[in-house]
Length: 246
Image 1 (cartoon, one colour):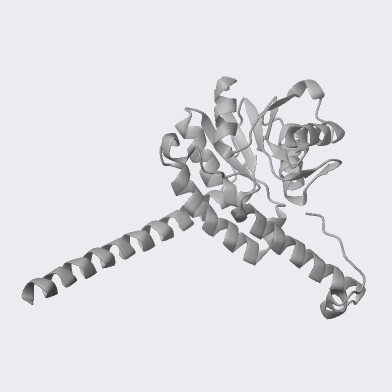
Image 2 (cartoon, rainbow, N blue to C red; image 1 turned 90 degrees about the vertical axis):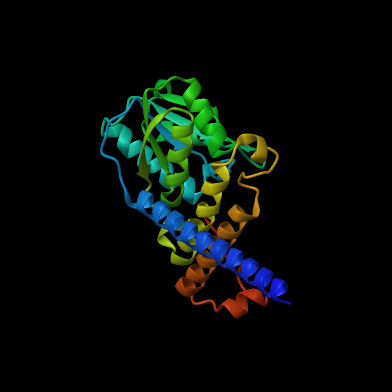
């Protein structure tokens, strides 16, 4: 009987310890993601690296546009002589092609744009490392900066973060909280050896990316309804449909 009680206390102690460690680790990770999201580098570098996001055949999504606008402003300010576009595929659309087209339209010379494979953050940083840049400025959404910087370090790239200030996801509190929380888990996952994580998809089609986009579309519909005076119930019952920029 005493042995069973002792074993029960040991198990309870182990579970309590694991819970405490997980909670502490989660809070520490959350703070790290939040700090990186607020830290805007003022350094110069060899290249501006823009990480991709969802793109449509004729335009970038709102989130990707915010990244590209920030990169354009940094390029105009002389922060780096080259803009590197990293992206994968949004369904049938090549993100880097949309990104390069947008940058050229914004006044960035085509000869100053480099397009590389970047289906994931890990692939993006590996591609950048192969180009041999001594230093880079990573332009991405605020919640993404922490993980991108960590991945750059793992590939031996000296990097600073330049979070996009006009990120619509960052400006939406529920989405910002969700994105920050999932980034804590994503950062821990990326820190594991590639041999353990290579077979698990982490790109834009996974659920952690789909949920924030669904929330963004819902928020946009509500704002449009309020602007035109169409109750959500009327829309759901077959009233005028609204569109989303995301």
